[in-house]
Amino acid sequence: NGGGIDGNEKNNDSKSEMKKDTTIETQRAKAGFRYVEDVAPGLKLDMDLYSILHMSTSEVQSVQVIDSYFGRTLVTDGKTQSA
Image 1 (tube, rainbow, N blue to C red):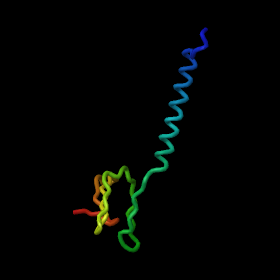
Image 2: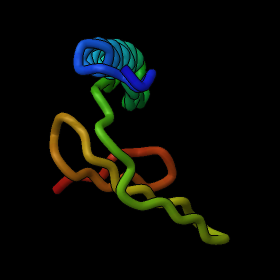
Image 3: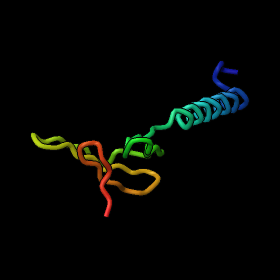
Image 4: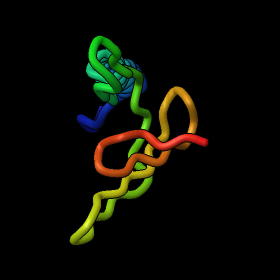
């Protein structure tokens, strides 16, 4: 044998890589991102934040578009907007 990786070693490496990927995904899922907003005294909005689609800031306001449990949501100056 020329000293290369045989089929069994390659297969074990693939299983090891798959296990690492699964562990990373598991840890990432546990970490999660949250969107939390104090709406009123005693009322807090707390939900999974899937992604931030847009962020911008001007002299007068900050604007974000987020993807959350409720779908795409507009947030201006830290407050959710809905119609």
